[in-house]
Image (cartoon, rainbow, N blue to C red; front, side, top):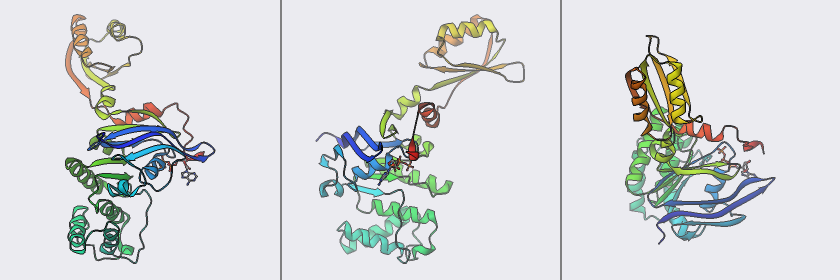
Length: 317
Ligand SMILES: Nc1ncnc2c1ncn2[C@@H]1O[C@H](COP(=O)(O)OP(=O)(O)OP(=O)(O)O)[C@@H](O)[C@H]1O
Protein backbone atom coordinates (compact mmCIF):
# COMPACT_ATOMS: atom_id res chain seq x y z
CA UNK A 1 0.00 0.00 0.00
CA UNK A 2 1.16 3.53 -0.81
CA UNK A 3 -0.05 5.02 2.50
CA UNK A 4 -2.09 7.50 0.52
CA UNK A 5 -5.81 7.85 1.08
CA UNK A 6 -6.14 9.96 -2.07
CA UNK A 7 -3.92 10.14 -5.11
CA UNK A 8 -4.75 12.07 -8.22
CA UNK A 9 -2.66 12.33 -11.34
CA UNK A 10 -3.37 15.05 -13.90
CA UNK A 11 -7.05 14.89 -13.01
CA UNK A 12 -9.08 16.92 -15.47
CA UNK A 13 -12.76 17.72 -15.98
CA UNK A 14 -13.48 19.90 -18.95
CA UNK A 15 -16.98 21.36 -18.95
CA UNK A 16 -16.10 23.46 -22.00
CA UNK A 17 -15.09 27.14 -22.20
CA UNK A 18 -12.14 26.37 -19.88
CA UNK A 19 -14.49 25.60 -16.99
CA UNK A 20 -13.86 22.65 -14.66
CA UNK A 21 -10.38 21.67 -13.51
CA UNK A 22 -7.18 20.84 -15.26
CA UNK A 23 -4.19 18.59 -14.50
CA UNK A 24 -4.74 18.37 -10.75
CA UNK A 25 -2.15 16.16 -9.05
CA UNK A 26 -2.58 15.71 -5.30
CA UNK A 27 -1.60 13.21 -2.63
CA UNK A 28 -3.24 13.00 0.77
CA UNK A 29 -1.94 10.57 3.36
CA UNK A 30 -4.10 8.24 5.44
CA UNK A 31 -5.24 10.03 8.60
CA UNK A 32 -4.45 13.49 7.23
CA UNK A 33 -6.92 16.39 7.44
CA UNK A 34 -6.75 18.23 4.14
CA UNK A 35 -8.24 21.66 3.47
CA UNK A 36 -9.14 22.50 -0.11
CA UNK A 37 -9.39 26.23 -0.65
CA UNK A 38 -10.14 28.48 -3.56
CA UNK A 39 -12.42 31.29 -4.72
CA UNK A 40 -16.00 30.54 -5.78
CA UNK A 41 -16.03 28.57 -9.00
CA UNK A 42 -12.37 27.51 -8.68
CA UNK A 43 -13.32 23.86 -9.19
CA UNK A 44 -13.26 22.42 -5.65
CA UNK A 45 -16.63 20.67 -5.80
CA UNK A 46 -15.79 19.32 -9.26
CA UNK A 47 -12.71 17.59 -7.81
CA UNK A 48 -14.73 16.18 -4.90
CA UNK A 49 -17.37 14.87 -7.29
CA UNK A 50 -14.69 13.06 -9.30
CA UNK A 51 -13.10 11.63 -6.16
CA UNK A 52 -16.43 10.36 -4.86
CA UNK A 53 -17.31 8.90 -8.26
CA UNK A 54 -20.30 11.16 -8.97
CA UNK A 55 -18.83 12.43 -12.23
CA UNK A 56 -16.24 10.94 -14.55
CA UNK A 57 -12.96 12.72 -15.28
CA UNK A 58 -12.34 13.86 -18.84
CA UNK A 59 -8.78 12.60 -18.37
CA UNK A 60 -6.31 11.74 -15.62
CA UNK A 61 -6.65 9.40 -12.70
CA UNK A 62 -7.90 9.42 -9.13
CA UNK A 63 -7.52 6.70 -6.51
CA UNK A 64 -9.07 6.27 -3.08
CA UNK A 65 -7.03 3.96 -0.86
CA UNK A 66 -5.49 2.49 -3.99
CA UNK A 67 -8.83 1.87 -5.77
CA UNK A 68 -9.92 3.79 -8.85
CA UNK A 69 -12.45 6.46 -7.87
CA UNK A 70 -16.02 5.53 -8.64
CA UNK A 71 -15.48 1.79 -8.10
CA UNK A 72 -17.44 0.05 -5.37
CA UNK A 73 -14.17 -0.65 -3.49
CA UNK A 74 -13.37 3.07 -3.44
CA UNK A 75 -16.91 4.06 -2.51
CA UNK A 76 -17.01 1.64 0.43
CA UNK A 77 -14.19 3.58 2.06
CA UNK A 78 -15.78 7.02 1.86
CA UNK A 79 -18.50 9.20 3.33
CA UNK A 80 -19.67 12.37 1.61
CA UNK A 81 -21.48 15.50 2.66
CA UNK A 82 -22.38 17.40 -0.53
CA UNK A 83 -22.50 21.16 -0.60
CA UNK A 84 -26.10 21.46 -1.71
CA UNK A 85 -28.33 18.59 -0.76
CA UNK A 86 -31.98 18.19 -0.05
CA UNK A 87 -33.73 15.19 1.44
CA UNK A 88 -37.51 14.77 1.00
CA UNK A 89 -39.05 16.89 3.73
CA UNK A 90 -41.84 14.41 4.55
CA UNK A 91 -39.24 11.96 5.94
CA UNK A 92 -38.04 12.02 9.53
CA UNK A 93 -34.34 12.29 10.36
CA UNK A 94 -34.33 8.65 11.45
CA UNK A 95 -35.95 7.56 8.18
CA UNK A 96 -33.33 9.40 6.11
CA UNK A 97 -30.59 7.68 8.08
CA UNK A 98 -32.33 4.28 7.89
CA UNK A 99 -32.45 4.62 4.10
CA UNK A 100 -28.74 5.40 3.99
CA UNK A 101 -28.05 2.51 6.38
CA UNK A 102 -29.66 0.16 3.85
CA UNK A 103 -27.44 1.58 1.11
CA UNK A 104 -24.44 0.95 3.38
CA UNK A 105 -25.75 -2.64 3.93
CA UNK A 106 -25.82 -2.25 7.73
CA UNK A 107 -27.89 -4.90 9.49
CA UNK A 108 -31.05 -3.63 11.20
CA UNK A 109 -29.85 -3.89 14.81
CA UNK A 110 -26.50 -2.26 14.09
CA UNK A 111 -28.22 0.46 12.05
CA UNK A 112 -30.62 1.34 14.87
CA UNK A 113 -27.81 1.74 17.39
CA UNK A 114 -25.61 3.66 14.97
CA UNK A 115 -28.42 6.02 13.93
CA UNK A 116 -29.17 7.05 17.52
CA UNK A 117 -25.47 7.36 18.31
CA UNK A 118 -24.89 9.62 15.29
CA UNK A 119 -27.96 11.76 15.89
CA UNK A 120 -26.62 12.39 19.41
CA UNK A 121 -23.15 13.03 18.11
CA UNK A 122 -24.25 15.70 15.62
CA UNK A 123 -26.48 17.33 18.24
CA UNK A 124 -30.02 16.48 17.04
CA UNK A 125 -30.53 13.39 19.18
CA UNK A 126 -33.97 14.47 20.43
CA UNK A 127 -35.31 15.40 16.98
CA UNK A 128 -34.75 12.16 15.06
CA UNK A 129 -38.50 11.38 14.88
CA UNK A 130 -39.45 14.85 13.59
CA UNK A 131 -40.13 15.41 9.92
CA UNK A 132 -37.51 17.35 7.98
CA UNK A 133 -40.00 20.07 7.09
CA UNK A 134 -39.65 21.18 10.72
CA UNK A 135 -35.83 21.18 10.61
CA UNK A 136 -33.81 24.39 10.43
CA UNK A 137 -31.01 24.64 7.83
CA UNK A 138 -28.47 23.94 10.56
CA UNK A 139 -30.35 20.78 11.63
CA UNK A 140 -30.46 19.56 8.02
CA UNK A 141 -26.74 20.14 7.75
CA UNK A 142 -26.15 18.14 10.93
CA UNK A 143 -28.31 15.34 9.52
CA UNK A 144 -26.24 15.40 6.31
CA UNK A 145 -23.13 15.01 8.38
CA UNK A 146 -24.65 12.02 10.19
CA UNK A 147 -25.44 10.44 6.78
CA UNK A 148 -21.82 10.95 5.70
CA UNK A 149 -20.56 9.16 8.82
CA UNK A 150 -23.09 6.34 8.89
CA UNK A 151 -20.97 3.73 7.11
CA UNK A 152 -18.01 4.42 9.44
CA UNK A 153 -15.92 5.56 6.45
CA UNK A 154 -12.12 5.78 6.45
CA UNK A 155 -12.29 9.06 4.57
CA UNK A 156 -14.92 11.78 4.79
CA UNK A 157 -15.43 14.38 2.07
CA UNK A 158 -17.08 17.46 3.44
CA UNK A 159 -18.18 20.20 1.08
CA UNK A 160 -18.81 23.30 3.21
CA UNK A 161 -20.02 21.35 6.28
CA UNK A 162 -20.55 24.41 8.45
CA UNK A 163 -22.07 26.82 5.93
CA UNK A 164 -25.56 26.82 7.50
CA UNK A 165 -24.44 26.65 11.10
CA UNK A 166 -24.42 29.31 13.79
CA UNK A 167 -21.17 29.91 15.74
CA UNK A 168 -22.00 27.25 18.34
CA UNK A 169 -22.85 24.77 15.59
CA UNK A 170 -19.60 25.56 13.81
CA UNK A 171 -17.67 24.97 16.99
CA UNK A 172 -19.45 21.65 17.56
CA UNK A 173 -18.78 20.46 14.00
CA UNK A 174 -15.14 21.46 14.35
CA UNK A 175 -14.92 19.41 17.55
CA UNK A 176 -16.60 16.47 15.86
CA UNK A 177 -14.15 16.62 12.95
CA UNK A 178 -11.24 16.84 15.37
CA UNK A 179 -12.54 13.68 17.09
CA UNK A 180 -12.77 11.92 13.71
CA UNK A 181 -9.21 12.93 12.94
CA UNK A 182 -8.20 11.60 16.35
CA UNK A 183 -9.71 8.26 15.34
CA UNK A 184 -7.37 8.17 12.33
CA UNK A 185 -9.97 9.10 9.70
CA UNK A 186 -8.84 11.01 6.65
CA UNK A 187 -10.71 14.30 6.20
CA UNK A 188 -11.09 16.20 2.94
CA UNK A 189 -12.59 19.57 3.74
CA UNK A 190 -13.80 22.10 1.18
CA UNK A 191 -14.42 25.28 3.07
CA UNK A 192 -14.42 29.03 2.82
CA UNK A 193 -14.18 29.18 6.62
CA UNK A 194 -10.44 29.52 6.81
CA UNK A 195 -10.37 29.68 10.59
CA UNK A 196 -11.88 26.19 10.70
CA UNK A 197 -9.39 24.92 8.12
CA UNK A 198 -6.51 26.45 10.04
CA UNK A 199 -7.56 24.78 13.28
CA UNK A 200 -8.35 21.38 11.85
CA UNK A 201 -6.19 20.69 8.83
CA UNK A 202 -2.63 19.41 8.50
CA UNK A 203 -2.32 20.33 4.87
CA UNK A 204 -3.95 22.77 2.43
CA UNK A 205 -4.06 23.34 -1.29
CA UNK A 206 -5.28 26.42 -3.09
CA UNK A 207 -7.14 26.00 -6.34
CA UNK A 208 -7.64 28.80 -8.85
CA UNK A 209 -9.25 28.53 -12.29
CA UNK A 210 -9.26 24.74 -11.90
CA UNK A 211 -5.54 24.42 -11.18
CA UNK A 212 -3.59 23.90 -7.97
CA UNK A 213 -1.74 27.11 -7.34
CA UNK A 214 -0.11 26.38 -3.98
CA UNK A 215 -0.07 23.55 -1.50
CA UNK A 216 1.70 22.75 1.71
CA UNK A 217 1.48 21.87 5.37
CA UNK A 218 -0.56 24.40 7.31
CA UNK A 219 2.29 24.91 9.80
CA UNK A 220 4.72 25.67 6.94
CA UNK A 221 2.30 27.97 5.17
CA UNK A 222 1.81 29.92 8.41
CA UNK A 223 5.52 29.92 9.21
CA UNK A 224 6.17 31.81 5.97
CA UNK A 225 4.13 34.61 7.46
CA UNK A 226 5.92 35.40 10.74
CA UNK A 227 4.86 38.86 11.80
CA UNK A 228 6.63 40.26 14.84
CA UNK A 229 5.58 43.31 16.85
CA UNK A 230 7.91 45.30 19.06
CA UNK A 231 7.07 48.31 21.23
CA UNK A 232 10.09 50.53 21.64
CA UNK A 233 11.14 53.94 22.87
CA UNK A 234 13.50 56.18 20.89
CA UNK A 235 12.77 54.80 17.43
CA UNK A 236 14.50 56.94 14.79
CA UNK A 237 14.68 57.10 10.98
CA UNK A 238 18.26 55.78 11.33
CA UNK A 239 16.93 52.68 13.10
CA UNK A 240 14.37 52.14 10.31
CA UNK A 241 17.14 52.41 7.72
CA UNK A 242 19.38 49.92 9.59
CA UNK A 243 16.50 47.42 9.93
CA UNK A 244 15.75 47.68 6.21
CA UNK A 245 19.44 47.15 5.45
CA UNK A 246 19.54 44.06 7.64
CA UNK A 247 16.33 42.49 6.33
CA UNK A 248 16.64 43.52 2.69
CA UNK A 249 14.39 45.87 0.81
CA UNK A 250 11.70 43.22 0.23
CA UNK A 251 10.94 42.95 3.96
CA UNK A 252 7.78 44.64 5.17
CA UNK A 253 8.40 47.02 8.05
CA UNK A 254 5.80 49.40 9.44
CA UNK A 255 5.66 51.70 12.43
CA UNK A 256 2.75 53.21 14.37
CA UNK A 257 2.76 55.58 17.34
CA UNK A 258 1.50 53.83 20.46
CA UNK A 259 0.31 57.17 21.91
CA UNK A 260 2.51 57.12 25.01
CA UNK A 261 5.69 58.20 23.26
CA UNK A 262 6.57 54.64 22.29
CA UNK A 263 6.31 53.16 18.79
CA UNK A 264 4.97 49.81 17.59
CA UNK A 265 7.24 48.30 14.93
CA UNK A 266 5.76 45.51 12.83
CA UNK A 267 8.12 43.26 10.90
CA UNK A 268 7.42 40.42 8.53
CA UNK A 269 10.27 37.98 8.95
CA UNK A 270 11.10 34.93 6.87
CA UNK A 271 13.02 33.39 9.72
CA UNK A 272 12.22 33.73 13.45
CA UNK A 273 15.96 33.71 14.18
CA UNK A 274 16.15 37.27 12.78
CA UNK A 275 14.27 38.72 15.76
CA UNK A 276 17.32 38.21 18.01
CA UNK A 277 19.44 40.32 15.67
CA UNK A 278 16.74 42.99 15.47
CA UNK A 279 16.61 43.20 19.30
CA UNK A 280 20.39 43.49 19.42
CA UNK A 281 20.37 46.22 16.77
CA UNK A 282 17.68 48.28 18.50
CA UNK A 283 19.50 48.13 21.83
CA UNK A 284 22.77 49.05 20.14
CA UNK A 285 21.01 52.09 18.67
CA UNK A 286 20.06 53.15 22.20
CA UNK A 287 16.42 52.15 22.20
CA UNK A 288 14.43 50.64 25.04
CA UNK A 289 12.33 47.59 24.15
CA UNK A 290 9.12 47.25 26.17
CA UNK A 291 7.39 44.39 24.40
CA UNK A 292 8.29 41.78 21.77
CA UNK A 293 5.81 39.25 20.41
CA UNK A 294 4.96 37.20 17.40
CA UNK A 295 1.45 37.77 16.08
CA UNK A 296 -0.51 34.67 15.21
CA UNK A 297 -0.39 34.48 11.43
CA UNK A 298 -3.63 33.48 9.82
CA UNK A 299 -4.61 31.33 6.92
CA UNK A 300 -6.98 34.03 5.66
CA UNK A 301 -4.02 36.41 5.28
CA UNK A 302 -2.17 33.71 3.33
CA UNK A 303 -5.24 33.15 1.16
CA UNK A 304 -5.71 36.86 0.49
CA UNK A 305 -2.05 37.30 -0.41
CA UNK A 306 -2.13 34.27 -2.68
CA UNK A 307 -5.21 35.35 -4.64
CA UNK A 308 -4.62 39.12 -4.71
CA UNK A 309 -3.81 40.27 -8.20
CA UNK A 310 -4.69 36.92 -9.73
CA UNK A 311 -7.19 36.61 -12.43
CA UNK A 312 -9.80 34.28 -11.06
CA UNK A 313 -12.64 33.93 -13.39
CA UNK A 314 -14.65 31.89 -10.86
CA UNK A 315 -18.32 31.35 -11.57
CA UNK A 316 -18.34 34.16 -14.17
CA UNK A 317 -16.60 31.93 -16.66
N1 LIG B 1 -22.23 20.42 -14.49
C1 LIG B 1 -21.56 21.50 -14.89
N2 LIG B 1 -21.63 21.90 -16.17
C2 LIG B 1 -20.94 22.98 -16.63
N3 LIG B 1 -20.15 23.74 -15.84
C3 LIG B 1 -20.04 23.39 -14.54
C4 LIG B 1 -20.73 22.26 -14.00
N4 LIG B 1 -20.44 22.17 -12.68
C5 LIG B 1 -19.60 23.19 -12.40
N5 LIG B 1 -19.36 23.92 -13.52
C6 LIG B 1 -18.45 25.09 -13.63
O1 LIG B 1 -17.12 24.66 -13.29
C7 LIG B 1 -16.47 25.65 -12.51
C8 LIG B 1 -16.07 25.04 -11.16
O2 LIG B 1 -17.25 24.83 -10.38
P1 LIG B 1 -17.20 24.19 -8.92
O3 LIG B 1 -18.60 24.07 -8.43
O4 LIG B 1 -16.37 22.97 -8.96
O5 LIG B 1 -16.41 25.33 -8.11
P2 LIG B 1 -16.19 25.48 -6.54
O6 LIG B 1 -14.76 25.85 -6.35
O7 LIG B 1 -16.68 24.29 -5.80
O8 LIG B 1 -17.11 26.75 -6.22
P3 LIG B 1 -17.85 27.19 -4.84
O9 LIG B 1 -16.77 27.62 -3.90
O10 LIG B 1 -18.69 28.35 -5.29
O11 LIG B 1 -18.65 26.04 -4.35
C9 LIG B 1 -17.43 26.83 -12.41
O12 LIG B 1 -17.09 27.73 -13.44
C10 LIG B 1 -18.79 26.20 -12.66
O13 LIG B 1 -19.68 27.14 -13.24
